[in-house]
Length: 153
Image (cartoon, rainbow, N blue to C red; front, side, top):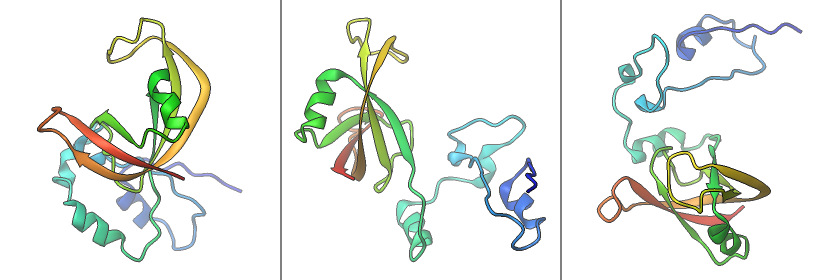
């Protein structure tokens, strides 16, 4: 078995390979300018297509869902685990979409739980997985946030 690493635009690189020659292809998409890549202008793909066009593009195809790993403070984790908490208010920095999954990992902050970008603390090893049923844009109430409606997997 031979492994070959190709670096470049996945659309261009895959076009150079013979049909049926690959068992797997791993790519890192540009996420519509949400990630920076050395030497690559992520804006060249243009604006992110509207949700209805993205959904239509995937109609009839099996689409891989994205899993988001998130920290969850103990006071939010306990009701989530008990099935009482069905929604999660989150900073909209990950492109959450209905059908994605979330892995909420219980995290105990060592700084008293004060909100900050990179809190210090420890993971307990406990986690819960949920599917995102709906993403509500609540920017008019909480700038930059979305409300994720969650359902069990």
